[in-house]
Image 1 (tube, rainbow, N blue to C red):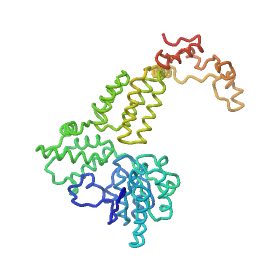
Image 2: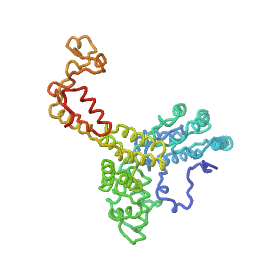
Image 3: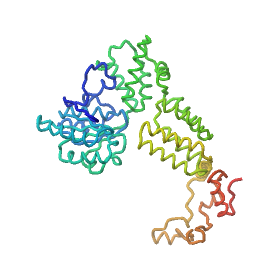
Image 4: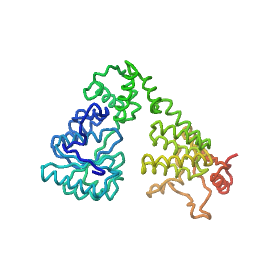
Length: 446
């Protein structure tokens, strides 16, 4: 039915040919006790447990990282409270699909006395017009909304709809929590129980680490590794075998290991070295390896500040814009913004003068400790402070020609220090000339 689908038995997913389903699907929790990593929600006094006990589902928004259990919990709640569920695609559903879904929900209530949940995965992709259409039906109780999102709902969900829902925050899964799921999968009939394969504990830990908090990814990696091990007549699933399997099949690497940092290092050094082709190659390597673009974007923003700096202040603005563009566009379009700014930062003039200046200042802070602020620079909000000399003899720059007056801004012990030594490269050369003009007694650079 277009961009949405209905489960006639009131469940989001139907189990047909269960063993042919992915392991992550088969191991979805069927009770709250099987949900891991969210004790604040599922504990004895947790809100999810109270909801199940009451049998009444309020409208909810689940906010948390991928693979933290949002969809699984939604399915579990719907089943436990005996609601029907309609899954609506945030990308594909238009006005017609939403109104058709509302009609189905109304029929469920009239004909069967059964309430309906609209489950919207990635609700942050639901534009404001779509959200506004839902609002009256949620408000009057025709439907119960459960939305899941990896983005802050304060920014992505319209205020009227947000005020009618309760936001539940899902925490990233720890390595230990994911290991609980992996062990369960190995010992459960729904999972891999009976498999003629020994899986070492350190292998489970390795899989949990590279999953980076995503239970779905961890379970799928375990299933693929186990399948390949069986086909190759391996009796034991070791860390080395998994490493080789990942390298051969997915170009993946350990996000906590050496290769992860080597590729990020090569990318950053190519940017610093003004080689856009090499930077693009390492960018492509990481993207194809499954590196999360946020890690790459952090390095891009850092390079724009550390290595380009004020030689081209536009680089930092564009790097931050690339981050925003990726968050807005997602995959795969967001990669284009990443590539565009990678080329820009690589080609920009370079200066680390700001970085070096900060290091010099930090060195003095550590050597001299907390030097007192000179009296003329201190804030004087009270008469007593003014009487003590706070703010006395401070000269207001805007009262002087050119908006500048020469006075001392450093503590007495550090007077005359020059931390910032601008280069001649790019825009920073203009800053150097201006400082030399203003502070004639100071030396900026060699």
